[in-house]
Image (cartoon, rainbow, N blue to C red; front, side, top):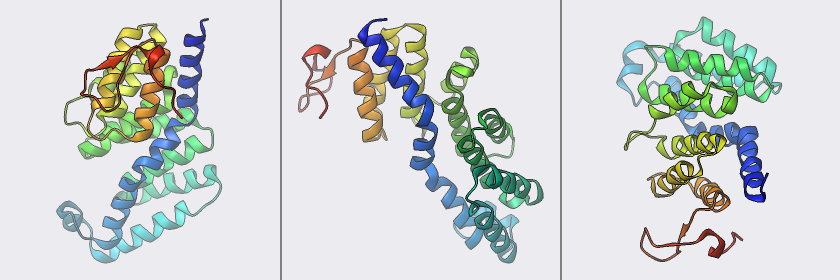
Length: 235
């Protein structure tokens, strides 16, 4: 294995281990926002129509209580039970349950919970996309290649909220296939995608260099590239 291929493998494995947790850290506000909606009963008509204020407060209290458990396995159990008994809190509880299961090392069970959220007809589109992407990130190469690519394809529309992360994930699939050109194309698109974080851009640049691609010259117009071996190393 070449030094470049070894680096790609190491970076991919690093993403495999903790990208799910970094992602939850990045998008955890989604869960928090829904909890606030449940507790406060304001800001979204669909919640106001179906949940009375007192019921919302009870659901919010139950979620906070379940999530306060320090042990991830017990926390997942509490959240799963809450999702089954309280439909008003089920969406948030299941997302948090998946995160807790992953933290406890129960990858397969976490993926099942995320699949359930993504496949439920009542799940709003944003959360369906979130659960689908989390599942891809969690399973990585353990997920059948065709299913992985099909899932990512559904997240790659120009205005899709998680497009940069989906591009990164598809690039990893291409790297696993040995198709460096396709991987570089996706990584370059991720660099240009609105909403791409600094951390994602840094990972994309590292992988582009490792795959033998070229990076844009900093401070020049997009499309002006230099060979990867001439690009300055990240500090």
